[in-house]
Amino acid sequence: MSIPFRLTLAVGLVFSAAVMAADGPRVLFFSKSAGYEHGVIKVENDAPSHVEKAIRPLVDAMGGELTATKDGAVISAARLDDFDVVVFYTTEDLCNGETGDKTPAVSATGMMELLEWVKKGGGLVGYHCASDTWHRARNQFSPESPYLDMLGGEFRGHGKQFVGTLRVVDKTHPTMPHIKDGWEINDEWYLFEGLQAETMHVLALLDPADERTRQDKYALPNYPVIWCSTPGEGRVFYNAMGHREDVWDNAAFQAAFVDAVQWASGEGEGAATPNFADVVPADLDPKTGDTKK
Ligand SMILES: [Zn+2]
Image (tube, rainbow, N blue to C red; front, top):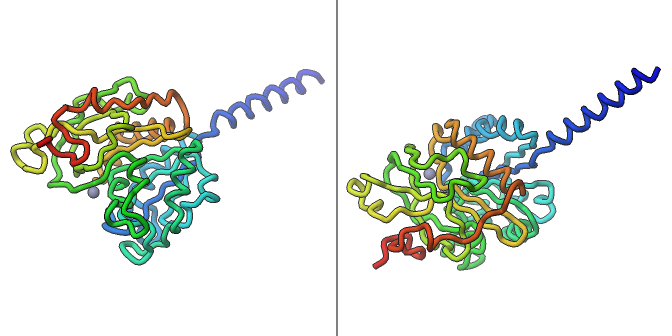
């Protein structure tokens, strides 16, 4: 009699351990476009977007849960508590429900509720156009953008797509094991202004290399394109990549997405000491994102 009982107990313990181990992050993928709508997050005929199709199996494999939406109502104190990590792939003034994809607006207090949620321990992960969101001058509620201050930089434009080279400046960071120093990859490379040099921990720079001679816009010192910070108890990670479908299909990029979400959910060391002055060329002006005059 005792043997089956012990077996049942053992199976029960193994089962609950497996359930515990599979208890991964609850991830919100938010892709409202109040301005330009990228093809990779377009939802047509209720089919999941390209990005959602790429990341759902990754979140599943983490034992996590993915919610994908463009409904701005989700960015509120009450709703955000259901998540560990919020991933932004958004454009322009998210408090506007009449422009772009015309999906429901974030409330007038939603941005601040998001930032408070991060400071209390939430994880904010921004890709690509997350920096083309809640611009300083174009925000209807404020000429300031506490959101961009927290994210770390503001989109100011881009040129033609090209194969850029990544220069990893913190190879040991928990978000970087799958981003190889010297990685060459084709994407639409964002240019920035308002880089938050005082708070950001820079992880990788873009080296435009020969593109400097082809497109004046990129005649710049190497500049940050992947960075993170730890405001309050929370974690913020930004990667400027992700315009193209084939970037989201890239195995290394996908592995790095998993690393970023896990880190943002609180796993591993925060390791986000500001390092801008140590790793970014001294002739890059963080305010303008251009060469110092
Ligand atoms: Zn783009």
